[in-house]
Image (cartoon, rainbow, N blue to C red; front, top):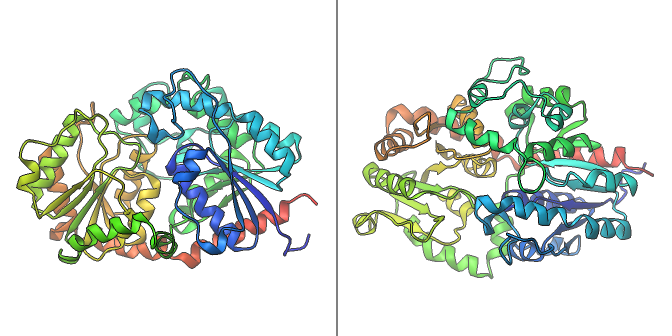
Length: 467
């Protein structure tokens, strides 16, 4: 097979921007190597994606598939950020309704490969019937996937010795090396919901098992420099060719090119003046992604903790309910020292600014990658999914500290928020976190390293492609 053959690769992510954005980053890197990409999603999601660099517009085609109407799914809901968490199963029902239009597109366009996410359990048989090779790309790291189950078949069949929340508060028995990979009790209770059949007719865990079992190549957003033991274990567990894709750190240069003539750039101009007035390494950047919804109690304790810390801060606040309010008098008391920002914020530009010394984060994998590529020490407050597992690992790597929480209900206090912030960002005891975060940025921010992983991945696709 000629190494210079142009591949046509279809990419079909799950309907969450935490999934769409890494898939788009991968699409851009593959397109830069001269291959053709069909990026498939819904109209509103595609319209909300970051603009492509001009040099890639001819190589990446956006394919818009409209979701069917589904009872109980609010109108115009096309991403998880559009709906409350209890409505997400109905979004999965709508997503499953794309099987026929997707099959029609694949039949008409005949891509060499399709890269898909955890959700479309029905896709591998369709692609196999059409002779299309299949990549399962999970945006998680290897330790998270290892935690899910002892094999894809075990995940599908629910064959797991862990049956109660307490079982998930210790590392799984199939991990053969020392690890602190486990949930807190309050996190374990939430995780058990992932294993339960929801309104879509399947559990998320079962969808993941089918996605892995139906692929030809299993790809993870990971690299050997961060988790070599876990990557090797993944291959043993699932008996699939495992190819780490690198961390896909988003490019600030690409974002600047795409945003320079847009309203997004105007937002940065508005807020950059404030950052420029702060001392180097003094600011706490606070953000919890697009899917974490804070309760009134959590908003109150966070706000008062930020106030008590005495540190300058920029807080991107997404309220779950319009009735949720900041504490009375809070904004007046922190005026000048802190900003509460309630609309979209240019996270990558903020994290890259010299004044930012720490990142108070929910520990989503994408957010951790963005923070550590710029060497920002982490103050960790995980809420759901893989976030607690990520927090355990990165506290072990000493690049940050978790805010202590009640083991049973996950509540936290303003005093613990303030204490942890000051420790990580200001005090001598936290210097090791600041130093380790800068040290690990040499891996997380090494674009050439991660581009080499993508080159290796493309080489595998060329090697395994059908004539």
